[in-house]
Length: 283
Ligand code: NDP
Image (tube, rainbow, N blue to C red; front, side, top):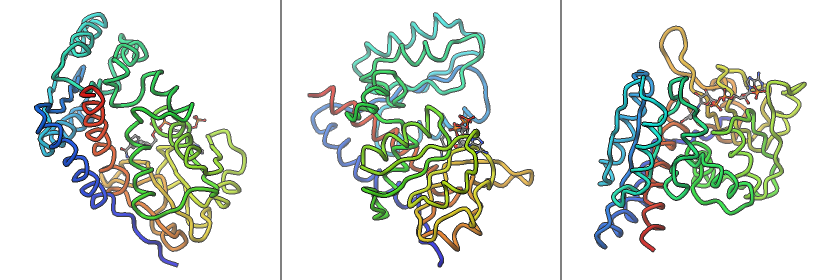
C-alpha cells in the first residue's frame, strides 16, 4: 500500500480562503481583525516564526502589530504591555512567542493575556474549556492537525487514536480534541513500555515527540492515518519529522510529510483564531 499524502500546504490555502471570507465580512462591518505578536529577545528561530505569523496576517488583510522587546525586559514591563493590549480595541488576538527569557515566568505571562484574546489557546480558561468539551480558542498546532484529518476525509468516531507525546501545546490538547470527536484515545510518553504495541493498534497515529524518525513503518497499522507533528533539523540541514516517512508511507493509508504537512496549518489556525476572536468581540 502507498499512502495518500496529506498536502498541508494545499489544505492550509483552502482553510485560509474560508477564513479570509469571514475576515472580509467583518471588515465590511468596519472591524479589521488584529493580532499583536510580542517577541522578547533575539532567538533566531522565534524571529522567523514571528515574521511568518505577521506575513500570514497581511496576506489575509488583517491588522497586525509586531512588538519587539529586548531580552532584559523586566517581567513587569511585559505584563504591562499585555495589559495595554488586552484593553486595545484594535487588537483581538495576543501572542507572546515562546520561549521567553529565563527571568520571566511564562505561566504568569500566558495567564496575563485575556482569555478572549488568547489566540494560542494556552490560557488555563481555554485549556479548561477544551477539557470540558466547550472548545473556545484552541491551540493552533493540534487544531491544524484536526483540520488535516477532517479535510482528508479521515473518520474519527469510534477509531483508536494514539497520540505519542503529552506536551501542553501539542500532545494533550490533540488527545482532547480527538476524544471530543469520539475517538478512543491512548496517550504514549517517554515512559511508555513497548510503544510499538500501542502504535501498531492505532487507526489514527499522531506523533509529537521531537525525536527524528522514531516511528518506522513496522510500527504502523496498515491503512492508518499518520499525522507527523515533529520538526527536526538533521546534520545535513534538512528537516524531517518524528516518523520515518519512506517506510511509513508504504504501510499507512494517509500520511503528512515534513515539511509541508502540519507546519503550514499552525499559522493558518492562528489567523483563524484571530478572526474568530474578532467575530466574538463584535457580537
Ligand atoms: P515536548 O518536548 O514538549 O514534548 C515531547 C513529548 O514527547 C513528551 O511528552 C515526551 O514524553 C514525548 N517523548 C519523547 N521521547 C519519546 C519516546 N521515545 N517515546 C514516546 N514519547 C516520547 O515537544 P512538543 O510537543 O513541543 O513538540 C514535539 C515536536 O513537534 C517537536 O519536534 C516540535 O518541533 C514539533 N512542533 C511542531 C509544530 C508545528 O507547527 N508543526 C508546533 C509545535 C511543535 P515525556 O513527557 O515523558 O517526556
